[in-house]
Length: 249
Image 1: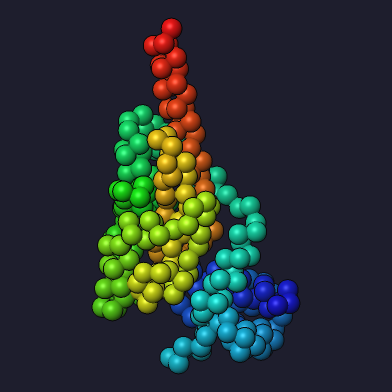
Image 2 (image 1 turned 30 degrees about the vertical axis):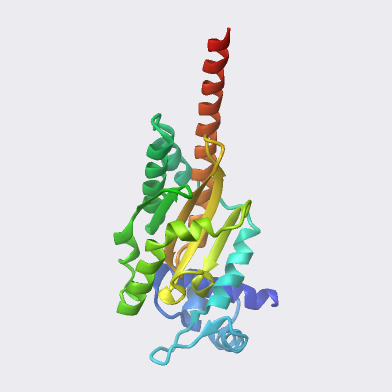
C-alpha cells in the first residue's frame, strides 16, 4: 500500500474508532488537513474499498473499516512506541499501592484496565479470572444486537478456557473480530498479554472491546499494567527470599 492510501486508511480508522459514524471524504479532507481534494480522497477511499480495507454501508455515504483495515492499522501501530503518560500514572498509583495478595492485585488490575480504556478488563491465571467493566462493553450500540450479546456472553463465559488454550510465551496478542476463537461473530476484539507472576507461573491481562476499540490506548494500558505487576512480583520474591535466608541463619 502506498503512503497516501495508508494515511487515508489511518485517518478513517481513527475517526471511526472515535465516533462510530461512517467517515466521508469531505470530513477527512477538512479535519485531518490532507493536501488533497475531497474528490481525490474519495477516489482513494474507493480503491481502499476495492482492496478490502474499507466497506460502504448502504445507508450512508461514508465508509467504515473492515477487519482487514483494522488489522493493517494495528500492524502499523504495533511497530511504534506510543505510551500515554497519564495512563501510566493512574495505573501505577492504583496497583502500586496494593500490598496485599496477588489475587487482590489482579482484581485491581482488571478494574484499572477497564477504567482506562472504557472497555472490559480482565486479569488472572489459568485457574481464576477477575473481570470488570461489563457495562462499558455494552455501552457500545453495535454490541447490543441480540445475537452479538449472546456471542459476547459466550466469550466472557469461556475466558478461562480461552486462556488455557493460549500457546506458551506468546507475549502480547491482538485478536480482531473473527480472529477471536470463541464468539467469532460477537463483533469484539481482544488484546491480551502474559506476565510472570510471583508464584513462578504465568498470569494474563486482557481487554475486550468492540472492533473499533482504541488499540493504541489498549496496548499502552496493557503494557503499563504488566510492567507494574512484574515489578511488584519481583519485590515480593526478594522479600520472600530474604525472609527465608534470615530463617536459615
